[in-house]
Amino acid sequence: MSTSKTKVVVTGFGATTPLGGDLPSTWSALLAGKSGIRPLPWEDVENLPVRFAATLAVDPSESMPKQQLRRLDRSQAIALISAREAWTSAGFAPPAGRKVRKGEETTAGVPGGFTVDGERLGVVVSSGIGGLHTALDSYDVYREKGWSRVSPFTVPMLMPNGASGHVGIEFGAMAGSHALVSACASSGEAVGYAIDMIRAGRADVIICGGTESCIHPLQMASFGAMRAMSTRNEEPERASRPYDKNRDGFVLGEGAAVMILESEEHARARGARIHGIAAGCGYSGDAYDIVLPDPTGAGQAKAMRRALDDAGLRPSDIVHINAHATSTPAGDVAELASIKAGLGEEAASKVVITATKSMTGHLLGGAGALESIFTILALRDGIVPPTANLEDLDDDVDLDIARGEPRKLPDGPAAALSNSFGFGGHNVSVAFQRAL
Image 1 (cartoon, rainbow, N blue to C red):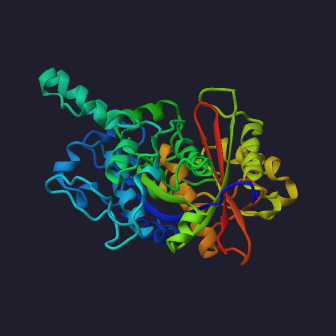
Image 2: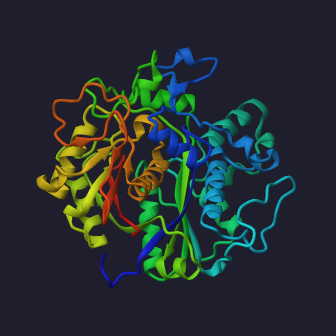
C-alpha cells in the first residue's frame, strides 16, 4: 500500500441477513452452503410471477422494542441492529450522553470499552431504495383513512438517508453522516467513502455499511415485469445459481451489514483487534444504459484497476474476488470477462472467485457492505465460501469458481476484491488486504 496514505483498518462487524440474525451465524451458515431463500408467506402470493425471496432469518422485533420500531422503517431498524453489533464487536463503550427512549435496549457498546470522541466519529450507511415499505404503507393509510391518520414520522422513515441519520444520532457521530445512493453499488461506495474520510483526516473512526428491506409485492411485480428475477418457484432455495447453465435471474433479499473502520494509528493506540485492511476503492461509470451494463465490461474492469491503484496493489496480489454475480444469464459471464480485463489473463487465472448471493439473495443497496465483510473474513480466516447451486458450469466460464465446499486460501500476504455494480452504470470495486 502507498506509504503516503493513512492506512485504514477494519475492527468490527455486524449484520442481520437471510442466513442469520448476527454476523457469526451468517458466516457459519455461508461456509456451510446454506440457503436463506424461502417461499413468501403472503396471502395473495399466487398472483405474483415470483413467489419467494431471501427474507431475514431473525425479525427485528426480536431484538428491538415496539416503541422504537414504530418510528423506524424496517431498513432503518436492521441498520441500527447491525451497527450495534459492529460497535460492540470493535470493543467500544456505549455512546456518551446517549438519550435512551423508554423500553429501548442499552447494549450498544462494551461496558468499560474505549470511548470515541464524537467529533472524530463519522457514519456512512447507504441504501439503494430506502423506506419503501413506509412509503407504500403510508399511502394506503392515506387512501383508506385520510391524511390525518398518516404517521408524523413518515418522512424521516422513508428517506434513503434515514438509516445513516439514526446511526449517527445513536452513536453521537459528528464528523459527518452520509448516505450514498447508487442502486446495488450503494454500500460498496459507502465503504470507499469511509476510507476516503479517514485518509482525509476528517475522522478517526467510521461506522459504514448498507441496508435494504424492500421485499414487497410492488417490487416483486416490478422486477418480474423486467424479467430480471428467477421464477424457480417450486424450489426457491436452488433459484440463485450464479455461473450455472440453468440460471434464470436474481433472487431479491433483505438485510443490513455494518463495519467499523479506523485509522491504523487509532486502532493500535487502543489495542483493537484488526481483522483486515481496507486498502482502497475504485469507481467508474458505464455511461451506457440505465439498466443494462456495458456488454464490453470496460467500466467494471476500470473500477477494479482503479481499486488496485488506490490500494497500491498489483494484480498478482489478488487471491480472491467476491463477485457481484447476481445469477443473471448475461451478467455473470460478462463480469468474468471484466475480471480478466482488469487483472490481466494470467493474474485472473489464479484468483478464487465466489458468488455469495447464491445463498443470501441480492440485498441491492446492502449487498456491497455484506460482501465486503465476507471478503475480509475470507482473508482473515483463509477460507472462501462456496458458490451454492452450481451444478452445471456454464461453458463460457473459464476462471476458478469456488463450488461444492469452502476453498482454502494460501497463508501469508494476500489481497482480495469485492465487486458491486448497480443500475445506472455504477461500478465499484473495494480492495482489502490480510492483516499480518
